[in-house]
Length: 233
Figure (tube, rainbow, N blue to C red):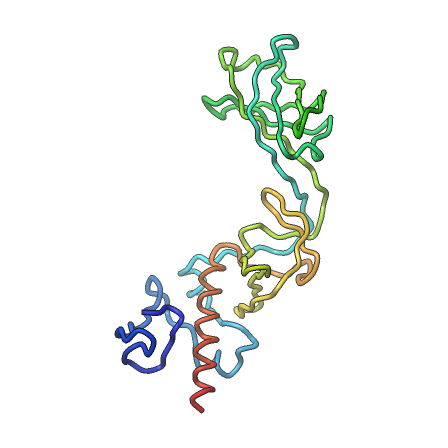
């Protein structure tokens, strides 16, 4: 059966002939008000507090956040300086002296050691990075994970998980008094935790983080139903 075919009546799929399967509410969630959606599709979907709680929707406010990119590489102890060092490939233009580095051995991550870059030696499409960290915690370790923290600055941003990729479009779901509506956004820097918003959202607006894919599926399904009902008329 074709998942993208929706009918208001029982029967068979006109494309492949298989019996149509009745849609069931997800995890026992009370059905969304389809009649209200048909009357006001531009207002998005309405979810009551109990429905939002049932699917554990999580909201986050658009705010100014520090955007960081983390570059991970392996490191070893430099036999001459005794400091933890390593090579970075392909992202050399982002590496600068003074940047913070989190360092931990392959055997574990507790505690995470803090250091900074004190020396850079350029190579062919690579750069050698030496930190100021002389490891006195894991004296028997030979190999380390290095996380170089690239500070891209402070920008209007939202959590990465709020963004739905639709080809070249990026969509988020905003919430205002129980109404959930998709918005197309323009993004800039993408960090480890946050993404810069260039256009489409304002500071203070609430966006859905966890649960946005469920809302997107429901919205598209009801949109298709709405189009079908208008076609029949």
